[in-house]
Amino acid sequence: MKRRRSASTTPSGCAIDRGQWETRGWLKRAGAEAFWGQTLITALRGDNGELEGLSCITRDMTAMKDLDRVMNDLNAELDRRVTQRVRQHTVPNKDLDIFTHSITHDLRGPVRHINTFAGLIAEELGENASEEIRHFRDAMKRASQRLNAMIENLLTYSRIGRIDLHPERLAMTNVLEGVVSRLRQAAPDRQIQWEIQPDLPMVVADAAMVNDLFTRLLDNAMKFTRKVEPAEIQIGCRTESDGTCLFFIVDNGAGFDVAKASNLFLMFQRQHHSLDFEGYGAGLALCQRIVQRHNGRIWLDSTPGHGCAVYFTLPVETAMAASGLAALGC
Image 1 (cartoon, rainbow, N blue to C red):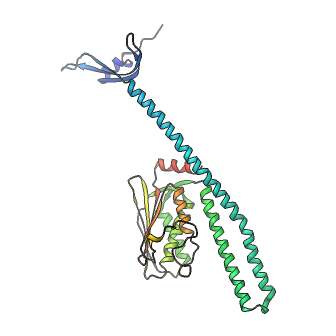
Image 2 (cartoon, helix red, strand yellow; image 1 turned 120 degrees about the vertical axis):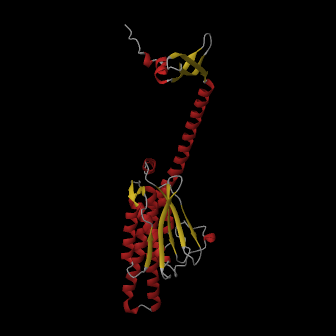
Image 3 (cartoon, rainbow, N blue to C red; image 1 turned 135 degrees about the horizontal axis):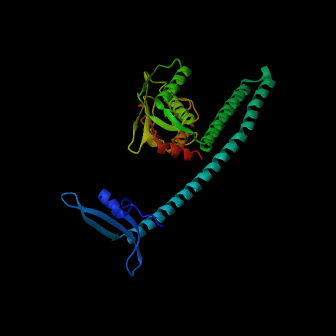
């Protein structure tokens, strides 16, 4: 024996209870093909609230249904193509990172040998070594040390591209206070006016990478303000309309000509002569890679003699940011 449905569970009953009820599904006209219909049932009541009848309006939505299906198919195809393009781009990059890591790792041995043999030659000659020989020995050591440092930077560059991200909630005020404290301890003689914006937001990012990012950028700011009195470094951020956090680091240091800096984020490209400021020209390239791993972007604005401003974006704390970055770590 079939159980009779309650009136409130039928479309008419739902319309009576709620005033209106809408259903969608395949319907069939008498002697015609089935169609996708939208049915709107409305309860008609008099001034006293008594039910006087029901209004039933059915619209043929087959064309709209077909359009939805076509759009879904197009979106699925678009997603497939985007995924394929991303995979085509990602795999060569990973292969290049592995290749770079392998080559630079293998170069370590020969560089150590050059440095060692230079020292052995100097010891063998002893006091009999001429000033010219000692000059050549020192030059070989300096060159091997510089080459070793460049190799280490290349290894770091490839490592940033290969390792998985481990995004977590980071209180940026605490992160910056820790970085600035370490930099102050490393250069106790420097008198720098640090201005850190209070109440910086929470971001979702890899803690080790973010610490490395701010350490490199603030170390650069300290280096290029060394000849300025008083040195000033300002750190702050603002939230953009797309939910990202735009950080900025502004200093009053040497600056450079942005118009001539087309190679700004390339490895081993410098904007200042090594006699003026030490370094290997790898810092900004490494910073860019860290920011890009977090789906961000980085750029600079500067004028010679009037300081430099570095801008970069990081994802603020949202569920979407956390899930998106977790996917990047694959």
